[in-house]
Length: 438
Image (cartoon, rainbow, N blue to C red; front, side, top):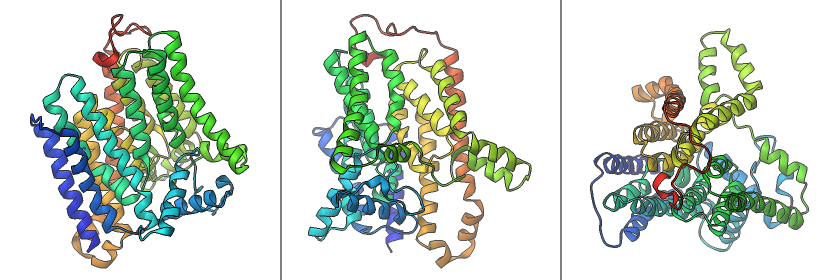
């Protein structure tokens, strides 16, 4: 029954999202932000209440969260935990405190740990929708700001990632989008850029990927002092978080560094190595290329990021440049998960790259639902033609996901090469805020 509810709820969410994005009606109701927050809250409420405990393979992540929460409450070093599977917390120390708070509250209330641990993600997702509303409104399109933000609040991909799976990428997404908003719509004073840097730093402390915003923001920043303030905030906040953790828990910096920089997810399950693994399953000689790819994944990733940065950042304004770096990262990394695609979505929609963003939502949500229903035993319990078809063809969703990212990256690079090279700090006329070119 709960799985049927999930399918119906995600289907309704998807219909609302795509209709609002495609039709883009011009609505400007009173209390727009309140309507967005209430509608998004209702969208999250059903998965939060219906799924009180994790199911299938997704329960491994929640089990890891509980291990981390218990270690924090017992004042043990989180990074010493080793279950023989994945590292329970391959991130810097921030989200672990939310896990600990959720466990403490769950022990004292009727709410389950799984319900409580997903609440910060829901709040962060709604915060991102509000930032999107304000950004579109301040860019002069107030009549579409409401439907644009409402569509994001109802988007099915964040729902399955945060409200069903329980992944906390929504938190770092909110911090990254908020950092871009400060950069784009405030005068680049040292104080404003320090605030921007603090938001990026908090995002890095939560999940490291917001560091990809730094080369874009530093290149397009204006003035040495504001740039230094931005970089200082982005560096000092994670450093302070790490030092505070080590002082409070007596932890090992070496173990923390290894865990936070050495994450390797399930091999050949996503991205380019997944595509190569499918080819290798049919063409034996391709297995050598797959092994080489896995052994040199870091070099490939670094090379693609550097080339993308050199081509795109000097030729595009901050927002499309951020999209390009995120697409490059996810197209070339060997350890991406479906839930990492959430990083791109708000930036792509704000940058006007709706077609690839909508395709990404469709493919990723479908892939997530296949995994979810497989984990819940739907296929084994029901069988039949539809189940057999899904079992035999679901791998094409992973291939389509990577193909979409790779094609998107190629288009972004060629589009940038056709534009004029702009030296640092001269993209905008003097005295003009970043909003016009963000």
